Image (cartoon, rainbow, N blue to C red; front, side, top):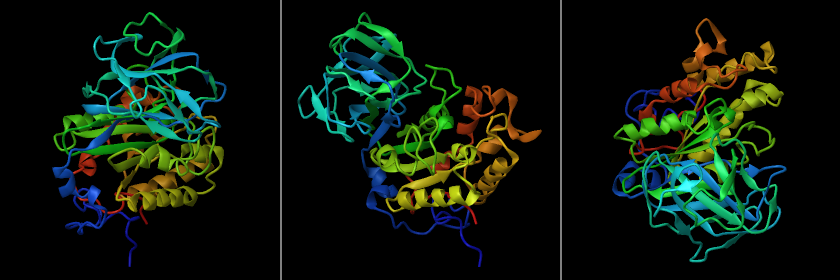
Amino acid sequence: MRRRSFVAGTTALVAGGALAGGTPAAATTPARTQGAARAAATMRAGTWGAGAYGLDGVTFGGRTGRFIVRTSVGGTSPRVRLSNVAGAEPITVGPVHLGLHAGGGAVTPGTNKAVTFGGATTITIAAGAVVLGDPVDLTLPAQADLAVSVHVATPVANVTGHSIAAQRSYLSIDGDHAADESATAYVTPISQWYLIDEVTVETGAAGGTVVCLGDSITDGVGSVSGTNQRWPDFLARRLLANTATAAVGVVNAGISGNRVLWDGASPSSQARLDRDVLSHPGVYAVVLVEGINDIASGKAATAGDLLAAYRQLGERLGMLGIGLLCGTITPWLGSASWTEQKEAIREEVNAAVRAGGGVDFDLAVRDPANPQRLRAEYDSGGGVHLTPAGYQAMADAVDLALLDPARTLIQSMIGVGP
């Protein structure tokens, strides 16, 4: 008897039973993932997020950072999360403000609201921990730029943050300038985010959060800074335009250089699943495209190594009623690490993901004349990272019906074929 696709095939999110055929079985996952429960609920969703890790050599403190981020879904009562997950000791943070970005280092007048923590303007974050700000009395539009201003009085070495933001943020002159609306004090542009790793909102309608988990391809290397043209950004805009998914937020959990099997500058996707995926509210689906760094570095000696890890991610998510939608690995001919032996591993992994009905990102962006290479117009240089047009093609390859939160979930969506 032919073995069924990994955990999937039984879920209604697989295009109404496209893998197995017929009507999907009844739901057996927790009530929070049931379509009927979602239809009646007001959801809190992640409207922005970033994978957090220690930034070696980066010290922050004695001044204020004004960090610019883009919402995916709109909503009310935003909450900001601050992270010290890579910290070796507690740190004290605050004041913190949240407002609508007005360009440069400025905030739109009247929108720069104080973020409190149990009513206090400062908070101490334990080593390895995160803290949530209180809900802020502010309405955030979809696809809006926010300014999150964070003051730290005492300098922190190797601060927790995100190194490749593809977005310009700002550091102030000395002192607390979190409440400033003008850009006058914000004199130093940077391309990193410090301490912040999540903004959530009440959507006012049934919805939830989709997390895009991956490496530099998901992080958006090759896209144009400040234009929000990573592939999860394009996916967020497609979801907003679709009436069935308009209340769904997208969190980008891509980290450049990340691997599935081994830690590097950041923990592996298996090691960081709890903090970068499961800790966000309303998560019901994860889209995974990752593995090229494992293959290129030799850490994935066989396709089976990666496929086993994919299955474990799917099993862990499925236990919580969260669907895993695997994607094929995009071409990389042109990289200095490319070899025919390593390419064979990528192709074997992709064959298994296709057999399981996963998203075929590879097909969407490869050169038809040479499938081992990116299409010329999608190659940002070096043969690995994509242009904005390439990232748009990746987002367009996702069947939005698979990400409809009103559908009934059973364990995992689409995993790995036989």
